[in-house]
Length: 369
Image 1 (tube, rainbow, N blue to C red):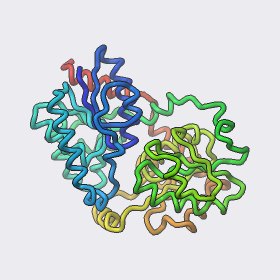
Image 2 (tube, rainbow, N blue to C red):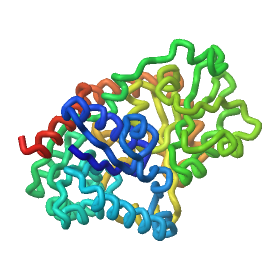
Image 3 (cartoon, helix red, strand yellow):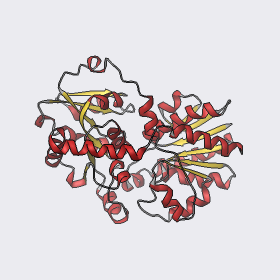
Image 4 (cartoon, rainbow, N blue to C red):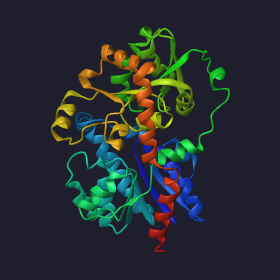
């Protein structure tokens, strides 16, 4: 069958690649075409647009880049219509993908949505639109099943795909040696994969490195940028820059400072104590604070529905508070408590297999089995 996938961020590229790999086990002759990234491209098929040209963060940034967004939407619609897939698989990225879903439905193309939009956080009535334009929704957070049921929509809970990625990971035994990392304990810095978040968060992360002389710092760098881009922030600081090595870094990290997003959950799965940080544009944050209906922003806290990790948002994301919170988890009771709470999270997360389960259901639904 012909599968058209749309992923607009680094996390979507990761999950899309795993899903493609799983679909190959279900379908003896799958053909892939997609908006995605390097990981999906490694699985074969044809990349139409890279997510690096699509990911814009926050209300203000979206408005400033509307022309590019509309061009990408137009290209995606035209390409889908021209290629005529058997099924369209949309991966997260709701601002873009819900518009594509509506277009696909108008053109009688089956729509499967993998990783539900976070409509439970704000503007919950969007579920009414989703019911009209999405044929099958696959959720990765347990509480989403009950949320959709309240709105009269049945969805499939498939577990979390990050467990698949972690299960498939094989640590590099020469990681420390290959990257000239010393015997000092490592503090990992994960500033995100989008330009806006890197430029807002990395300077704050780097501002505290001199306050922890007994540790070494390493940055998980996004492959969509080069060394020169990161060195404009690093300048003379003693920090190791690592590309495409996030899991090896987390495998060896003693603690971490992490941009809010998928990486917070990945860090928790590796049982690395962390401080979560987030900064958005002033207008974007003001709007979000009026609309968002959830108590937390990190996936770790959302899944367990209690504070496990500290979240430093906007004005709280500063050198003083970050240093204090990091100090609280590199040793002592704060570290012990967080590691203990991670065990509760892991119980809720369950076992690997989300990609395989989703692929099996997509194939069955699409093939009419």
